[in-house]
Length: 87
Image (cartoon, rainbow, N blue to C red; front, top):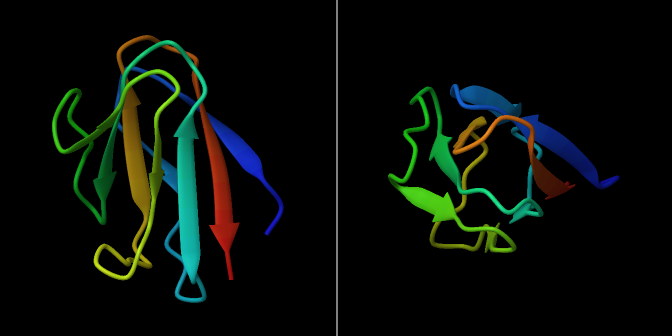
């Protein structure tokens, strides 16, 4: 459950691996750029689906619970996404 971060670029990539032991997940965009997320094997599409503006966060709850991988794409290369996963 150690906090981590991912550098998100302008192409869709996996930022959180699939984890069947996951019980919670919080993602926080600590950059000034937009970061869009996709869940499972779908590629993230910029400004589509769950999109975090600079400073915004997304927290998994019982209605959007998933153990799938999370993919992200950003409006500018090197955008920072803070990650806290709970087991």
